[in-house]
Image 1: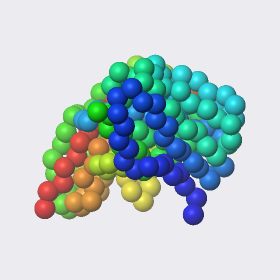
Image 2 (image 1 turned 30 degrees about the horizontal axis):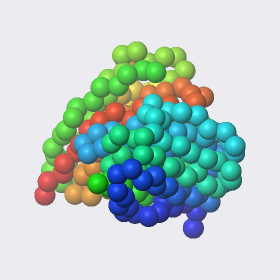
Image 3 (image 1 turned 60 degrees about the horizontal axis):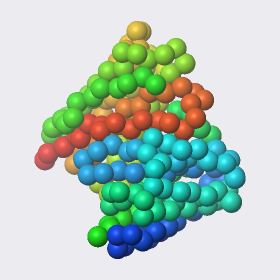
Image 4 (image 1 turned 180 degrees about the vertical axis):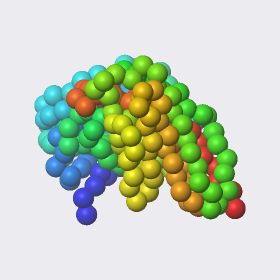
Length: 114
Length: 111
């Protein structure tokens, strides 16, 4: 089955620790994205990547880092510099960037930092 | 990017038709209109997309008037499983990843 997987579904960390969220896709999509969603809010773009070895900052990139060494993988690291890291994180992919390309989303990772 | 405005919430009953309107007064010539649906604790999924007039698929219809300053997502005969948040997005064909998901419209379908 083709799709996007995110792991783990729930993640708990202590304040001050870096944590890496996994995102893998087997849809052969060029573009991948990371969004953050807070309760009752819409999605906010953290980073996106149009091709391997290239990525761009989104609206709220501060305190986050990404890599895109393989087409299938786009891991997100939440660093200790992120002041409010507790949130629902969603990864997505699409054939290209632009609104006409449907974005396919993973199931999400709910991160809780205490 | 064109800003969108949609109702925060709507209530409906099973079997009714639901119309959710999105306002996008500053829509540009190259902009398309796309709707996504999100269930609690899941990622959004694409519903429908259009540029002008009417688009229909197996899930919904999208009505876009000639001036394109608004659009209406129509869900025929909703069921409890249509309870979700619906997002209206407007953007260019080749925008570089910065789609804006606002707060969306929370649709609650009651029995």
